[in-house]
Amino acid sequence: MAARSSDLPGVVTARLIEELMTGYLESFAHPEETAPNTGSAAVRFVVREAMRRKWRDLHRESLGKKPKFKLGRRFLPLTAEERQALEEFLDRERVRKLVTRLDCRDDTAQIRLRDAAFWVKGCSSLGLWRCAALVEVVGHNQRRGGYSLLDIKQAVATVAPISDPQQLPVHHGERVVQGAKALSPTLGARMLSGTILERAVFVRELMPQDLKLELAMLDDIEARATARALAGILGHAHARQLDDAARKSWRAELEGAATRSLDAPSWLWASVVDLIGIHERAYLEHCRRFALASEKLREREAG
Picture 1 (cartoon, rainbow, N blue to C red):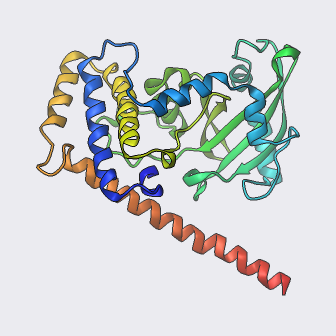
Picture 2 (picture 1 turned 90 degrees about the horizontal axis):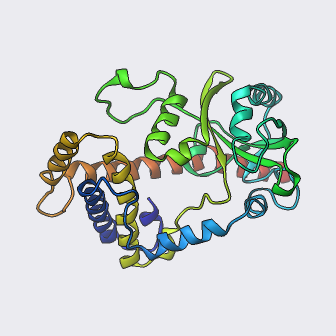
């Protein structure tokens, strides 16, 4: 999706799919490595930038000058019912432990909700409930900062095929958390699941080090190196969860599914193309139903 939203030509998307498969399979060849190798300068740059960031950087980007969400295009007000349900959810002991788990916070500190808003952010805001919560840590070490920014997202049933449904939790939020712990243990440790107003949700504490790669600023060569590096990270996470026999079997199946015109399985290419079409259709439909309707309402009110 990042490639299609950038100025890169369509043929680069096909090359990125090939690089994804190459990086993924390389990780299966060396599952004993503690971390995948990366030849991407962009990935190394983002890692260096992430290590330098502080809480004040995240505060400035998400909140501005005050510890409060500025309502507008990015943040919308919650209903009174949503606010009350959120406060009840944050009052649970396991949520308090999630917030105070960091080394710079006292384990016995209490938390209280300072502000909350519906978060309009990318595809996760299309038809699903998503909330940003600013939580104050009361009784913390004053020199280390006393706020926590929580991202609370609705979890729905997976559309991916499941080999053994008995292995998955019934609660959709718990399924997401378990997946995060398996793919990225450090990230999964900052997450938990729950239910708010009968919605299954998962909660993640945002950190200043959480940065995303912007593919739009990369050229063809660096975009391909980045795709290979990111796929290696995913492959490394998958490989360490399988035994030796399963790793060899899965790798052989992927290598044998390459097509004449693409060094990647045909089902991978077809899935990517279908997802791009679904994403664009859903986005444009969202614009027609909500954005355009809001503009017309403002025009009528102004007139």
